[in-house]
Length: 334
Image (cartoon, rainbow, N blue to C red; front, side):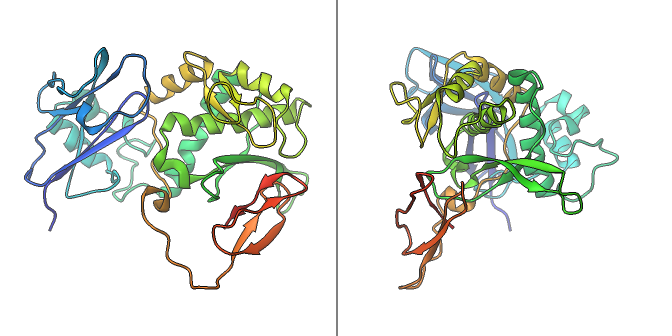
């Protein structure tokens, strides 16, 4: 038996907020007011998210000032949920009618994961594979158009569970055709273990980071294995990401281990906001990255470590720190 109602809302920066109300047998909240310090894009605390049944919810007394306010419609589900469940087209229509969102009620497929019309949509929930990888493909094509003028070739985007320090990687010509070896495909991999603790905007910035590697590879400016040079750094800045080994201003801009930070009001920030404003989100994250502990390993059990660049493998105790001497890359525990 399900008890209460769980509410979800996503702001324009891709942060999702949830609340469970045990006494709500039917949805009572239809809107939230999300208030954050002016100019900030960070996730706010629960005290700055005010739920309401009206179109203009009150602002929490905990909200810092000066602040900017965003009113977002709420999605309600019966029962208690840690992550947002998937709704069918019919369920979304019913929820939209209940919340008074007439446009979504008339065209529920516009907010559903299934791109087909209501008549074609299956009665069961959409396929997780189509949802997760369809979202990545949509993001890739959006950024290819808005940031790279459509110059990048299509690649194979994958999820690869790596150590928490690894957010993603690019590997040229990683795949070849089973029956025609002349057919090649580059790989861009994202690490879903980190998704739960990062905003959608930050995750998408990692995708674009790897797309810059792909751009350099195909334009003859590729770095040597694992290294990030000045040409790559210049290409990053051109799309609105500033290279930094600390992910913050002031860090080194070239080197073996390199991250970035988003340039405020830069090309990426604007393109990402445009994508998220269409309702885009990422549906899945690795559950171990959402606070669930990994099963304990038996004493004496060794873990496998792999260099994602040259695929060198080694075995050592769990949570050891190993580095590939040839590539200068910290090896990931599998």
